[in-house]
Image 1 (tube, rainbow over the protein chains, first blue to last red):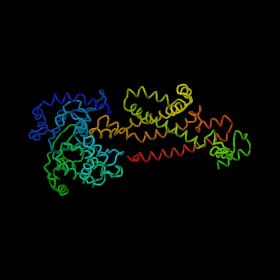
Image 2: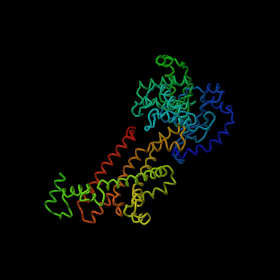
Image 3: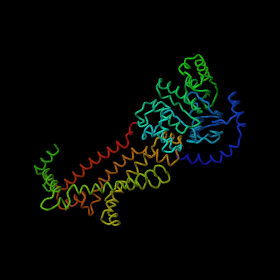
Length: 297
Length: 246
């Protein structure tokens, strides 16, 4: 299946990018601000992610299943946007559109002004680590660096740096299956960061981990994104995770999948923020409660 | 235990000794074929080990060519649908043919030297490798392909760095089966002008009613086959240590 949509995805890209690249943001900003209120007003600069009226349908033409209907979404550089909602609300489909794995049935999707395409500058972390078992930990990172065009001679130093960044120094020679689930997900994160992407897409990356590991990784990803200035689109079904991580939380609802509400999160985001203190703060509890209320409808 | 039963049957003389030789007879032939005696070197001028070695060499050569041709062929069948429609029936056709059926043709085409023997082994060993490779490449987990695409892999990198290594465990199993097929075909390959060669030795011994030597030859083939399979299993374990771990 994937081999067939490679060329298909490539063919229309060049033409459409040029055709639509000349369009200014002006035409899209009013749409976005209608839906998101205040968020659109400050979006004068080019949005990293820009979706307008995006619909995604699965299944046969006779019995289409609508996963997403008319979704508008703009994410500005440096934002940590979280999509939250019940299972089946299309949040993963939305992320897959941004990643370039899914083409919208209708609507307009742009990432940094171009049609989204896998491997075109967005790092993706999935729910499962999806590491290549035939490669070592370092080999998995080398794969990503090779695809990003990093010269062979520079790779060992880059690998060491990446592993250091995710707290796994000295593991480059290890077999991936020798690592714990949490460690594997750290490697997956390092692999997604290898090409130094401007945009990081994370699809419930901590859902399969135990509570303690999850909390630790939440804190690390929060700090890492702040330190690197990476724009993040993060999918979760947990209100707590959404409020803790996101600078902005978008609530989705099912049937058909759409964005129904938005919650700006004003919690401290400085790199030296004490996240465990943040978890215990009344402001965090208030936001979490509010989000849970919105999610219940 | 088995030897005891065998010896008992022979002692009871249910069948004449020419048809069912005793374990002792087989052992004597084994020793005779393995030594230089009365100025005669083994059997037909070659020691049993040499016969076996020549056959193993043919099996190795045939299997190597089969790998070189079968893996790319399987990759093509597994990834290019229009080619699969044409090539897959051909592979299946080859796989169902008994080697003796095409030996005559190979002899007409390539004579009676090494060429027809190697060709026969290649034709016998290629289908299992191609079939295993095609099936394995098709079964490459989609989530790994997707992860590789997200990292910027184009079609070539996907094929060589994801599909091929991901398929490697099944490909190696295919190779192991193929070597087994080559093994069972080597006696057929050596029917014509097969000396030196364990198959040729067995054929000649049969022609002269040397039943004990035929049995000694069969035992040599079977035992070396077990050793070879164990070696291939070892290769499998060391080459694809991730098998069953993910």
